[in-house]
Length: 210
Image (cartoon, rainbow, N blue to C red):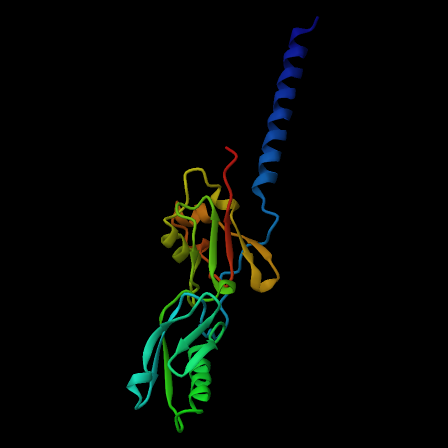
């Protein structure tokens, strides 16, 4: 029996097995999703009101009608002389004009200013973080908000997270998914991995297999 040939065959077999494992791991590390674009914010973004927001309504020369009111879970507000006025999805200026129109039945040429003082926003525009974040939660979107801003707010990723396999589900683009490199960004300080968020984004952080 040729023991030298047997040893050589075993060694070749081991090398082939190792190559196969490396190939599988490389395949797993390659994301099926394109990398998220660095810039994602629209040229102009107007904050729109959502349930849970507070709005400060100022009616010029009518202090008794000026007050701060919450936006109810149904997206409406109630003020003196104005009941059940829809506020959901409107910006402050649009809501002010609607209040003026409603008050015009009782006051001559009312002038109204609306200031949003507590920001939650509509559910469709909130940023959701799920999976292996230190503190998974929902965040109100802010213009020019970045992935790093989100990570700071949720306290980073857990020790079990596969950060570089994380993805952003972008509802504004028909639920298209983009890959992001959270481990490089959070653990290694690689700012090239930072990207802008868009309203309605869902950040999904999977658990590592190893």
